[in-house]
Length: 59
Length: 516
Figure 1 (cartoon, rainbow over the protein chains, first blue to last red):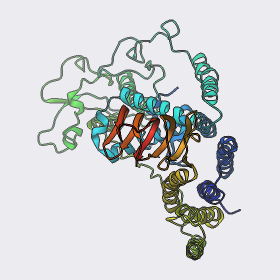
Figure 2: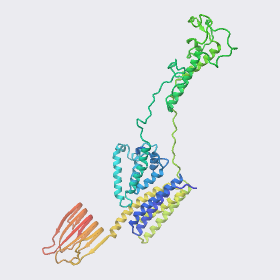
Figure 3: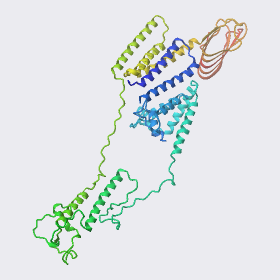
């Protein structure tokens, strides 16, 4: 099994999420802050847990 | 628990800066737990981010002498006391909590829960498990006793060395203790041999009865000019048998060894005894000639320092380079397409350009998870993220002003609102330039954050009362003020019989402009 680069995965997911959010804001022009308050931290936690799991499996 | 000040960022167990790995190694716990705790702290008002940044800046790496902060700002950083750093980090945590606390729905609850788990589940448990040694618990220290001789009759031998049954200090396991023990053992063996030699020939040394010389041993005169080699002449450092008192041979004559031998006589030992004695003497002398027979004072060989090499990053693979090339091509195509759309009239802002570029880089990084990360992609992504933040803030400020623009035109006295015009954010534009007044009138307007522009008619007297918490006021090219807590009244007379228009304008934060 080829070794995965966890840093690339986490950074890529985070940067892509930020970019999609910025594009949505620039095009649609609306931000649901009530949704973002929960979805933002939840996304960070999910990405962090994913990175930890992959790192642990690699070790 | 080891002190937090003893933590060093790990160079082998690291995901970002090695801080969690270092803390886990210092505390002896699973690094995964430390990382989960960091994430939990991060969503608690951003405290985890502040603490992580502080640890990354202040804690040096394993094997390094200086921290990142010291590398950036020089050794002057080390002069700042530790309490000051603690205060700075605490203030940063408070600021982070006040800024991000309203955005994150979790508050400080996760941090408090984590602190409770750490204290009751780890710190207190360790203190209970391993209490500090007290005077009652500490075993009494037994003084080291000098070893006794094997014959147990005298404290020391003639050479002042202990015997083989010497009592050794308890629990000596250091290199020095082992070397000292070896030295004592060797000296004790030499003393035991000497003692046995003084008592009689060793059991293995004496020859058989057939080999025993028939001639009795006696002190005989040395032959003048004798060239027989003696141990003393063979090795000048070894004392010969003549220098010692003979004890073993049994004299056969009354005037034997009991009487002091004449000056011109020497003791003739049996050949087998002389050979054995010479051999032992030579070995012992050779042994004692070496001042450091066990290598106690030899300089220690240099300990090879293991060189910790970072694991090879899979970024130099050909697939990674190909991925970087593909990413650059896609990025160029995307930007070109946006440029064409912009030229055709589509509303493409700077935010869209930067966000599209960031999306391409982000997806390239995701693909690099399996294909390998080429150098430069991650720094470019971080720079684009920072640029996106700046561009988005600038765009949003302009858009907010544009979207929140509120323009109102009043031309008649009856159209003027009787209640204050209120606006929270944005631009409030009041056009009163065509207002027809037959009597005095009053208008109130309030903007919390933004701008308030009022155009007044020429044919009325003006009574402008304004109050600005923080901002700028520009009134009819007659008055311009900037600062905090601005409050004043401006009166402008247009004629003796003209009605008076009273304007009451308040702004919390922003810009006030009154023009004709």
